[in-house]
Image 1 (tube, rainbow over the protein chains, first blue to last red):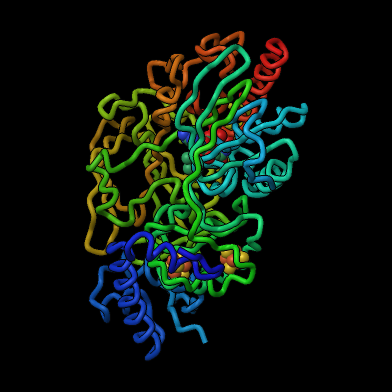
Image 2 (cartoon, each protein chain N blue to C red; image 1 turned 45 degrees about the vertical axis):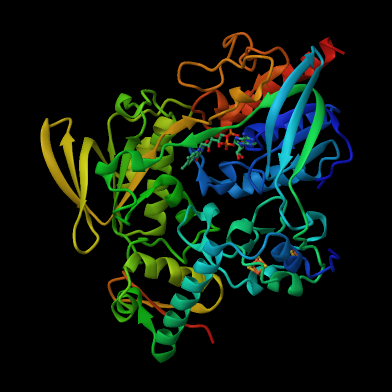
Length: 93
Length: 433
Ligand SMILES: Cc1cc2nc3c(=O)[nH]c(=O)nc-3n(C[C@H](O)[C@H](O)[C@H](O)COP(=O)(O)OP(=O)(O)OC[C@H]3O[C@@H](n4cnc5c(N)ncnc54)[C@H](O)[C@@H]3O)c2cc1C
Ligand code: SF4
Ligand code: SF4
């Protein structure tokens, strides 16, 4: 098989007969959650509690995915509440 | 940084590139010996490179580790294999061992990677980041952590969808999915085992609720939360993103506990917990921090003063044995414990619990030796055949041990023990030349 520089992923995909099912599933799930979170935050800035209620998702999963989106540069951290307990999160412009 | 296969013959093989292995490699290399330093992880630095600050001085761990790691990486006498494991060692004669080392493909040519992170940005995936102990995600194309060495991307092939986006954006074309596992046969004169330690898995004590109650975390996870390269923008409960203000430490989790197969004291947990308590009080001035302990073992230089300093700052110390932890609807945790001084059962509510998990031996190092027996001690750490006179000597002539591979040990003791191991290895090479 001829291997073209910069296109070696294609080579491995063909060699290994496709993409591992688990990797495809993980990507699908992440895309689903990312879309939901970004759409919710596009409407208004939200706390984790508000996102949890809106998306009907366990709050620890909201923390994990939301913090990942902050790391990936898609979401920014806003202000903390008067009790210094919960932050608000917003879409990164 | 050397990461090549040019030579298959070295003076010394150092297995494990934590602070002990790194220090031993540097000592050997500075004396003029050629060293191959092997680590199974994608970066050198071991556990120390993941720490926030160090007890009892509260010096920044990264500020100490980074220059050391860069010295190791740039040393002309040191070749580093990361993502690699030794699979077999045969002793041929008094001055020759043959070791088989397997290098897993990184799918990135390290020498050409500029760590620009464009591949990370382009990669569509997200999976739990093992270097942040699962608190946050990372991409399948990723730089392990910001102070890693080699500072280069890697591809997590198990979570990669082979979409090719990373390759298309990489300006240096250093991503290469044609890379394959390599097995190298290496001839060396001496070996230093510096494979460090494992941490106790708190899932083995279900009554503490780790895994089930999301606001119960390990001290290693808290170490990440308070490090400058932390996963979150501040210290947060992973259960709901609340800034905690009533934090509890449970000491001796998986240590001094025969019921979980580890009867010995881990020696570092008291002090790292006291360190974290002080750092938390600095980061969250309004927070209450309570440490539940059986005994505080502050045996080293400056340790007792460090303990007293924590008390002076307002850290609450309770001599108490935790029976079980349960969770309230708001994610707070109820600790049921025996107050040892009062001889009474008590309950206390906290909003976050940190389990100070103990030190366990790494597994399998003895199985690598084909025609010799590497003796382990009764707790399965690497045995020291002459502990008082020659603490680095093992049951195999020419094989020495450094750091926490011999048993629980803090950083200064690991560095000291690496000094002993490298000196013994050097004198062994000279004697058997
Ligand atoms: C939460 C926490 C906080 C701490 N805080 C402090 C502190 O403030 N001050 C202090 O003095 N100490 C502290 N310590 C202790 C410190 O981490 C240890 O003393 C130190 O890491 C020991 O270094 P080491 O090189 O012996 O082992 P490690 O750091 O465990 O390094 C061992 C290396 O060997 C590699 N390895 C293992 N097996 C293999 C194999 N088969 N093949 C190839 N490579 C292998 C590992 O990947 C690792 O890189 C803390 C520990 C913990 C858990
Ligand atoms: S692999 Fe390429 S794109 Fe990724 S960090 Fe390295 S140079 Fe940048
Ligand atoms: S090929 Fe793999 S690592 Fe590269 S961008 Fe696609 S999923 Fe990420």
